[in-house]
Image (tube, rainbow, N blue to C red; front, side, top):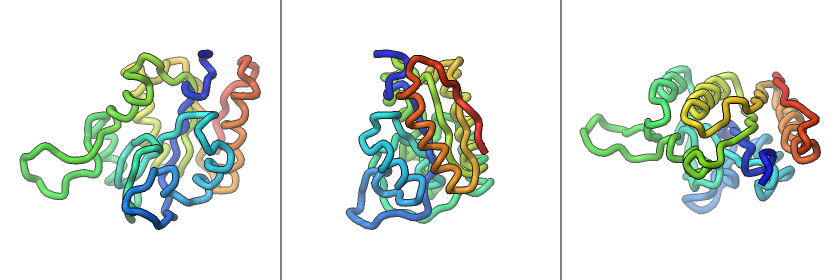
Amino acid sequence: MSDTAPSRRLLILSCSMTKRDGPQYMLARDRYDGPIWRTLRRVDPEEQKARVAFLSAEYGFREARTTIENYDRRMTPEIAAAMKAGGLGTRWPLPKTQRHVMPSGEHPGMHIASMTEHGRKPFVEVCLVGSAFYVDVMQHFLDLFQEDGFVTGSAPVTEICAPIGIMRRQMTIWLNRSLQDASGDAGAGVWG
């Protein structure tokens, strides 16, 4: 497997306010229905071009093939700060009470570890897509992923934080670029 194989590329998207109705639990990549997620399903329906994760105010960082319920929670400065302070071990959703019991939820560390075979196959290219709050938290997690060996230190990182139409277009270019330029002729960019 080459370093540019789709399984070695990581695309992290912000969640979407628009969500599909359906069963109580659906894959996140199917539940989220905003323009970025519809573009992803059209351009890379089977994750052949990159592995996909998401960042959500409700669920934190998770793989996009994780099942989630429908919810309504927006990212706030306070939630973003709590995610950054909690690092890779804080479970999301946060507990609703302060009781001293094992917290429910899942943490970012378990998802990134699973996606990289516990660091044996670290990501070598990353793209972050979302609004400023989300990209800020994504970048923080990316730094931690690199420290722990889940993303190589030399991985090119593309950040896309712009109006929705531009984000859709730039994400499509990023998804399609690496497969066409697997020889390494093209580099990553920073857009926004």
